[in-house]
Each structure stands twice: as C-alpha cells, then as structure tokens.
Amino acid sequence: MTRNPHAPIAPITEPIKVTLLTDDAFFRAGLSNLLAQIGSIDVVEGDLAEVALWDAGNDNEKALDRLAEIKNLPVPAVAVVRDQAHVAPAIAAGARGVVLRDQVGPGIQAALAAVRSGLTVMDSALAESLVPSPPTRHDGHGNGKGRGELTERERQVVQLLSEGLSNKLIADRLGISDHTAKFHVNGVMMKLGASTRTEAVVEAMRRGLIRL
Image (cartoon, rainbow, N blue to C red; front, top):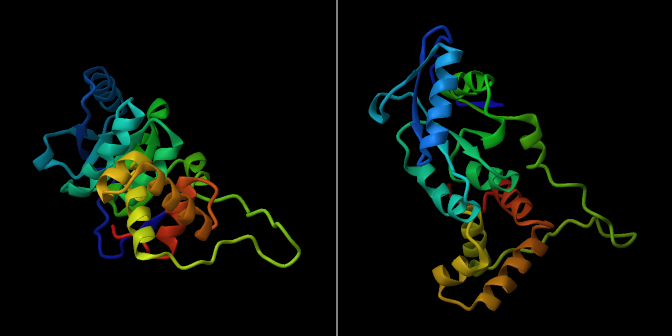
C-alpha cells in the first residue's frame, strides 16, 4: 500500500462517510445492508462523502467504457469490478482501491478506512494480477523484455488501452481501421514486453507513458 504524505490520517474510530455509486438497485441494497451490519460507516450523498464506493456493473464491455467516470469523482474511490482484467484500467483511471464484485464482504471497511487515510489498497490476489509473469527468453542473449520506443501513435493507443477501450473503440477514437488499430496494439505489446493488454498498461504506467 502507498500513502499520500500530505493527506491527513482520519481516526478510524470516526464513521467513514461513504457514497454508493451503482446503477444496480439490487447490488445497492446488498451493499447498504452489508455496510449497516459492519458499523462505523455512514452512507451519505455524494457532496458529504469522504470516499466513494464505485461499482463498474456486471456488463464487462460497458464497465470498461465507464471507468473514465472515476477521474471526475470529487473524492477518492474504491472501484468494485467484476473481472481481474479491469484492475489495471481502474487504477489507471484513478481508483484508490479495487475489489472484486463477488468478494465484497466485511473487509471492505478496512479498505474504505485506508483509502480515506490516503492509502491505495487492493486484495492481494488482485495485486498479483498487476505483476507480469517473468518474460520467456527466446535465445541465450536477449532478456525477453521489450525495449522499443513507442511512436506517437502507439502512445495514443496505450493511453486508450488504459481507459479499457476495445480495438474497435480505439479505431473509432483515432479515425483508423480496426485492422490498423489491432496492428498498433500488437506493436505496443511487443515494445513493452507484454503478453496481455493489462500488462501493457501496467508497463506503460511504470514508464510514465500514460497521463492520469
């Protein structure tokens, strides 16, 4: 976990003021009931909140498109996602915590308290999904890690990847064909030494190629 050194640490004995941001009425009811049972958490309207519990929803495609909403929230957010593949895009979008939708439980109190205090948190199993597997060496000399410099177009592509866009949406955004978008995505992954789109986003974050 990391902490903003300038953020004040709120005593964890004070109720955490949380706003629930979800379009799923059933999930909202479940969350409200859970938080009420946990205690030390007050569910409030957005302008009174210290932390937002933001739900990406059940639709994977729509979830990726909606991640950009996190950047515009007035308070730090814990993102609730359905798929581990959404972890890196959620962090890139500005989430200060990430939990899986089907694993939300009493431990959410600790996550909300930590985020209120300026920490960035996530379940250890999710954190592992952000760490790329050691690259496979293809010969006796190379280290298997991509080292190529990204072109300006590839920088644009990796920025859009960090927003969770599909190849088709990237093509639409940049005004290029689906085939060209796929070509650029493959080039980005090769140069960043990534085997998945998530690994490409994480490596781009490490290199400072993504604007948050």
